Image (tube, rainbow, N blue to C red; front, side, top):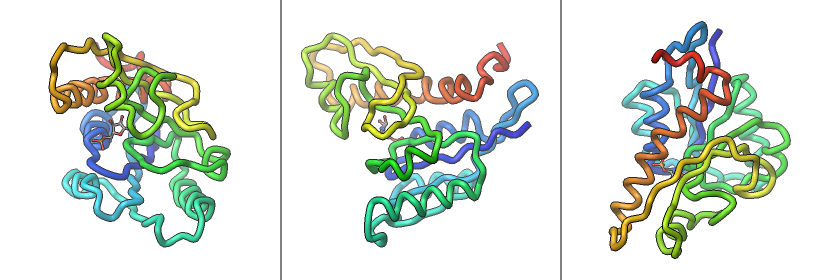
Length: 196
Ligand code: GRF
């Protein structure tokens, strides 16, 4: 059976590319995964070029042209539903989602902190600047409250004294690139089918 994914992003798209490379058109046991479309609300997002490079369809709708958050979300829901995906994946999608979206779409998100710590858009910096000895990342279900849905998977990162923010960020991204595909397979019930 083919498991259909839709991936939403707004910017760089490194997690999107990683998901394409590790999961798209790959077979896991009896099942195959296909990213049926990616989607960006930002017409300048670098991830759009990544889609072109890998031949993955990408839909773009600029949220600025909608008169309310809800009308954009409903248009997005309609678009997503037209692809009948098994799962929607938020991958650096920089939009607060209204109940119009969260009540109709089953989606997961990756967040650069050990939730429930450091919710919101400055999580990477907040984790870096905190006096904690560890940082980490979380994959969670999306619900109507920002970064608050049930946690699916987490990974920790030991902080290094004096490490530059750019290096910390790179280590966090590397960890995200390991965890997100694993978490997607877990949610799809395919993790036991990964060849060892
Ligand atoms: C990641 O750090 C992710 O945790 C957060 O947004 C960032 C997206 O990075 N939600 P990229 O666009 O995948 O490179």
